[in-house]
Length: 281
Image 1 (cartoon, one colour):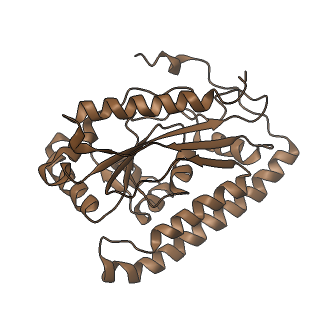
Image 2 (cartoon, rainbow, N blue to C red):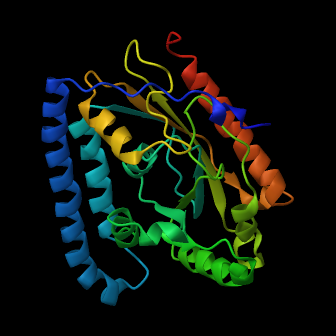
């Protein structure tokens, strides 16, 4: 499968009206207070939680969930989910549309994202990622054993880790082929027999009469402009998540077989959800 869609003309930049700029100010202020106020609370709680519980985080993930649920209320972006969340030890994999996925996937379940190490150095976002327990990985084969050990430590502690096997965000209209690299850690002897994987399909439905790629964020699209567009939009569209049935890692021969199954499941769910609404332009 090719990714020639990246060369397509991106959505036209939305012109923000005076009322839109008012919404940007009101929503942006409320969102900043919510995120950074709760970040301060999380750091204070973590001062007590860390020495008592170590890698375990029995309290702080609920603060993250509170932030993400209320972020959608502030944005007036409708949020729907189907399917049961996994209770087995293991990981969650999902397709990736934009930065909004982070809020969507954190809003209903205590999870910890797996992200490339460069994100840790990003101003603002890096602080939030570290505070919420993100697992940072480096694309360096020399450190593969070290990263496998870190995965094992977090998974044995009962953490639900989440990563995006596509390796990039998209226009939201498709699911790209899943990369198999991170699936390899699940087949370590001490993990294979105890872990499960839950595929999740995520679809952003554009506002009425808006282009279908409205919430997609990919390539060299500017984060600031995308954020302003989302803050200004009224009425908003909605985001929909389908949690598919978890599968045991030991039921698959290797990482490629497991990745292929997850990709097919996520893609099928993604296509079904997109067909539920009349086609937009």
